[in-house]
Length: 388
Ligand SMILES: *Cc1c(COP(=O)(O)O)cnc(C)c1O
Image 1: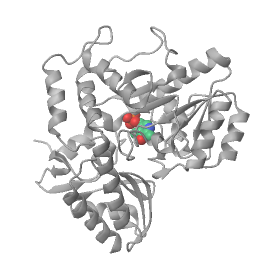
Image 2 (image 1 turned 180 degrees about the horizontal axis):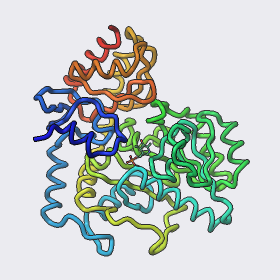
Image 3 (image 1 turned 45 degrees about the horizontal axis):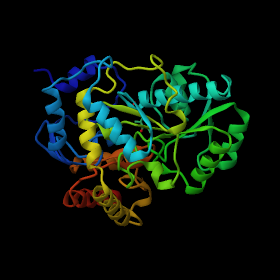
Image 4 (image 1 turned 180 degrees about the vertical axis):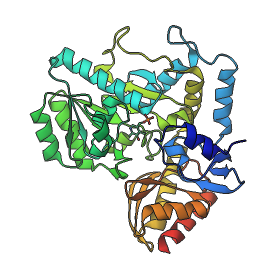
């Protein structure tokens, strides 16, 4: 049998520089590679496996649905996606839900909803979406345009028109960008993930919400990474006491199967009419049944566990040898290290701990239910590597 690495490099497009590691199985927060070596996972497939690998309840929800029917198309009703939409609306106060398959697709939906709403309400020239510098909103041509980082843009120009970028945590700049454009919406991540695990300031978010309200501009919260319990609240924006008009999410709520969700609030709930948007796989019954089982379990008890584990990590790492700073919220943390972060990541992997990077920081996105014992062991190893 040909080695997986050989097959991969021969036949798969070179978009991913992979680590020399093949995961063959896992349970909870422990993964096993092809040689039988075990790793404590602090990355969860980039904030996806929020209850760890092969979680029993999630598997049961998905397989039960799979044994009934796996897909129907959106021409017919199906129970899991209706129930998931109901629970999302109950837990957030949003009014209507659109299902797609990824974070990018959720954001595409949000952008389309905002443009259609603004065009109908204020006129078609009100099409600009203001996003923040250093943001990340996806890899499609339009969500790349929304992403406020030139490095992602450069090879794919021209991107979709009608985006402008304001500096995060600079309310003057945001005001200026809003006034320079015919603005439909402002889109933000409560904690910028790919941009370096930087939470927005409370003042900035409150002012942003005020500007949006005053000028009838929609507020779009991209909760693809920080959402679904990771921040210590169900959604990251909830930490700021604001109410967005549109909330997008993906990653963690799928528990490992692809799903993307755009939730539409009061003002925009009826923006789409029949045929104005769609997705073949969107609301797939197996993915939706899994997501429903996940969402049901993000309760107050779990959220207080998230906060306690976050406090533990922050306390252990802040001021520790070789660590310059710790940023983030809940179980989405960025660590600025004295050593080169790629070296830290590789050495942690050698020692059986998987971490991620965000820009030049080490990024931690552990399972929300990671057992305390495993978390302690992993943080101990990370500390030792940073100090060496
Ligand atoms: C990962 C991510 C996306 C894109 O999600 P995909 O599922 O990869 O399309 C969008 N926004 C944020 C904040 C993300 O972290």
